[in-house]
Amino acid sequence: MSNVRMAYLLVAHTAPQQVNALIRQLLNYGDCEIYIHVDKKNASMADELFRSSRVHVYCEYEVRWGSFEIVKAAFFLMEKALGSGKEYTHFYFGSGQDLLVKKGLYEYLERYPEKTFIRINREITDKDRESARYRVMWPHKLMRREDWNVCRIIRILIQLLCRCGLVLFPNKEQLTTAMRFYEGRTWFIAPEEVIGYMVRFIAEHEDYVRFWEHSLASDLMFFQTIIMNSEYRDSVADELMYVNFGKTFGTMNHPLDITIEDDRKIENGNFYCARKFNIEKKDVFDYYLRKVES
Image (cartoon, rainbow, N blue to C red; front, side, top):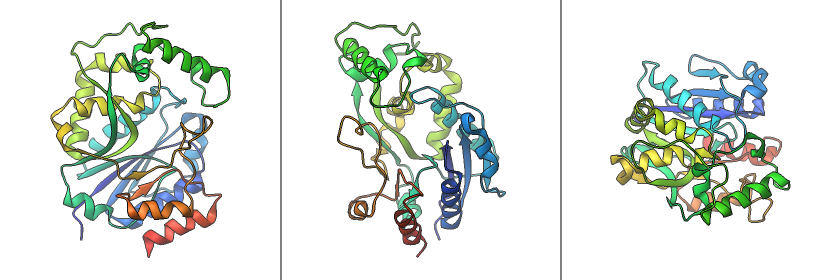
């Protein structure tokens, strides 16, 4: 039997029936507890979620697309889990649209107990378009997810100008300690020691929080930068989450729904979880539930 004890930290905003299926899958799979943050825009959803002594549901923030609230929600769940008085070996930060898609996650984590599994794409400098995420104080009205609207065009323009050295709406907050910035993906699995370090770092560096307060898509850089500027950078491994991003202008920023055709890549790769799932595609959803249960 595995010695891994997982704290699942999940952010959810829709489809309570789907989230309940995920909750049951996780509870049945291994030793764990689940901490869920429900988007305040859909607060009534919290009443529809499955409850037990191992499931903890909160509703604190209105999580707008691209905003800092998703980081706040993640940090909130980290504090709740660490402050629970219960011991966990690992923390999984994910969404209500995830599923486990292959057996062996706990056994794999037990083989590499010091590894943090997170996608780090690269270091970001002022010469990169992505630097606009933190160099610009982004107006809230530009944080709209729709792919075909003027807000996206304006965002792209602001980022390109920033790359060329012209920073519109400059971020006036400054870090007291210089840091190198890293960009990656939102979701990760990390040992308790790394989560504890990040929570302490954030509590002790209010300037770091203020610096990101009005950033764009900070979930792609906030925790990644903390980890890569720490002693834990040498223990980073690639994510265990399978995601299939679109290739067109209208889909490239969003994960596509998982299909049966993705299973070959999942089996051939080092993936134990995946997103995003759509419970309305029942054949696919049920296939992966059965696959992990059997």
